[in-house]
Length: 339
Image (cartoon, rainbow, N blue to C red; front, side, top):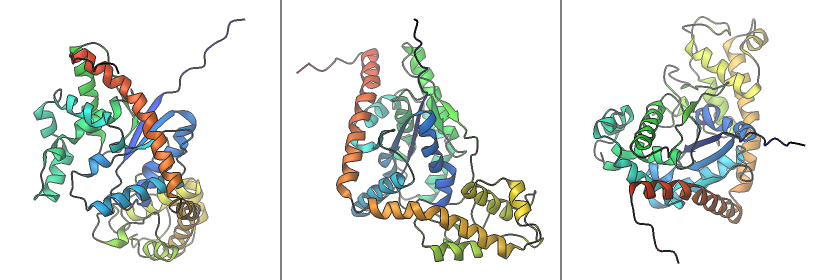
């Protein structure tokens, strides 16, 4: 009897910087999807700490942020038994391939990156080469694992397009080496906006602390921030053009409860914004409670965290070394002597 081999799952690569506070926007827009993707795809996840040093870091704070971000993502549902979740700086192939890809990336291509221009304005006293060239490192992150798909938001789409161009250029000069990655657009992707200016994306860099909610915020702080969320003078909980603040709250409520827009409008028919804001705050608090409790447990177990990221780094190194060795052979580097 003839047996059929089950189709290979597509590979998804995704990474996030451990640059401090993780917001509700980060979670609902990306991290919540990480846990769901693990069931359908072969996922490889990373904390992109090499990217973080394009901005000056205080060493002790940087180390703490990295460990806390690792624990928090595990608490959010990343399963190290299903998906290697490693710390980028512990897998040396990333930096090695990044240098090689720098030599296959055109200066003009990097000059056109809008994020470089934006960050140069924010950090005018430290416009370093890493800030300019980090899209090549991002390309290396993705291409090392022959990723088929990469979840990207609007702010990273340009970088993925560059990674595709670099891969196609290398493949054309030599022979097919890299998988050309496609963007992954989640079916229920959420773009969470500022609670104080709903025309802008929620960001921890916002000077107004009431504009964003952190995953580890205390319940009282969450309630206070939603109570102060900007809405409009019209009244009525309904999704409509020109009601950016209300639309944003509906989107958040939908993400954490699973209710549709129509169900939410029906639930709050005849009720005011005060009732709605209180319900959103309660739903967010309830949703985050198990994450916060699991984080509190994990951050106390440093040995377990080290065990997880060390094993993941070994898996990632094994996978990525195959690609790097192939690249170096095609370019013409002499192979190292066998021990």
